[in-house]
Structure formats: structure tokens, C-alpha cells
Amino acid sequence: MKYKMTAIIEREGDGYTALCPEIDIASQGDTIEQARDNLKEALELFFETASPEEINNRLIGDIFVTQVEVAVG
Image 1 (tube, rainbow, N blue to C red):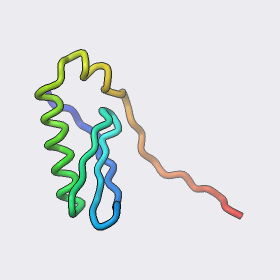
Image 2 (image 1 turned 45 degrees about the horizontal axis):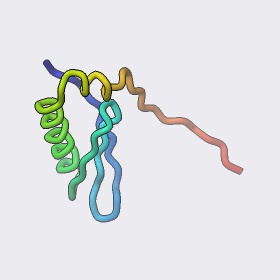
Image 3 (image 1 turned 90 degrees about the vertical axis):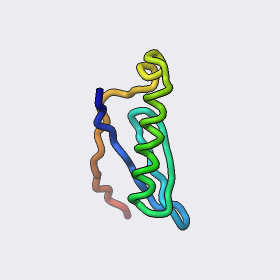
Image 4 (image 1 turned 45 degrees about the vertical axis):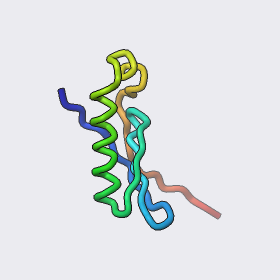
């Protein structure tokens, strides 16, 4: 089975953090690519070791990432 997951990556200090909101797992790396690859590895390990019940309890349905424009002042 394959899941298509969301990776939200942001700069944090000298590196980057990567979050998968569908399953609430995060990782980090020195570069964007490393943070993404580390998150992928963390997700693969989670799915390999978690019980089906834990996966169902943590897995959130659809995640929508968008931008909004906000007037300030």
C-alpha cells in the first residue's frame, strides 16, 4: 500500500524541520532535501511498526494547504 502524504518544511535556525500533518510526525535536516528525506524515512518506519489501530487513530483525512491574504493596518 502507498500513501501520498503532505510535507510542510520550514527553516528553523540553521536547518529545516519537516512535518507530516496527516499523521503528526516530524523530522529535521540541514537542507530542505535532507529534512524531506528524513521525514520520509520516519514515516516509513512508523508504518512498518505501528499497528493498524494506531495508524487509523492517527491518520487524518484530507489536508488542504493554501494561502490566504490578510489586510494589516
